[in-house]
Length: 382
Image 1 (cartoon, rainbow, N blue to C red):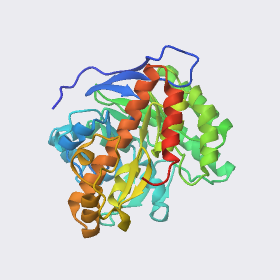
Image 2 (cartoon, helix red, strand yellow):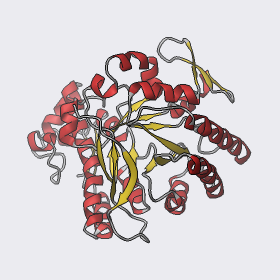
Image 3 (tube, helix red, strand yellow):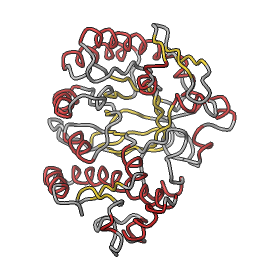
């Protein structure tokens, strides 16, 4: 387990062109340095589904995620604190980011009640009444000991009418101010979440409100939330293309809940540093494989006798060791090993994509890299 060190979240851009939107850099957390751009696998309940910490170490993610809502309910943040914090509890020595619970609250619209004080909802575990406020969210994250803590926000759906969206955004700003007042552990940093839907003027207004708070006590990073929640992809990309560059350049920029290969390349092109998404592991459990040649569906009978790797350009444990025929067999039989091996590959591919993008940025060849990646995905299923 790594030792906790003094964090320094101020971002060092290594590309060397301050006018460029694309950037590769680094910042330091209490559990290690993060080199960006980086994809962060989601470990909602203290585990990335289907893979062990040792397997994750070989995959090589910079940061992994835990979830405040889920871990606060089960096993409980106070228990995790008594057992040494989330890093020790789950056997992961690298940086951890904890989501605030805002997205889970958004997804439970039928069983929750939102007020100025916070959110009352029913536990999905046992139906018991629960309450999550900005203060309680940060208290849970403090007990978990995450390196990066997220302020609780109200995450609106992609098609919310403008007047309601403005009211929601204003509440998120008030909650952000309350979150700022919650003391954290010395190694922990707080990220602000920007909302505003696909309205660029609202995004800018909300950022200005966060920067007023930042001037008094700086946030350690800035996240863009409320995208990829039902709006058309073209609208999401239009906002990102104009807005990401306006986020503070001296702090990490995090695009929440977005993680298809296409979205990663687009985000990196426009200055995003951090990404997270359940997609790689979720797709893996359904036999859908991400490769440099496009998407592959292991359910298809045509893989039954194919004696080659999932991706000829991948060096992960799965691709080094097993044929498509074997992985197809495991999937058809419902064997748990198949889920694990597929997840190892999908996460290796996604983490590797951002790692390769970083190297291309440092070597001043990112446009060619992005073009080559996109050309590979345009081929027929491998």
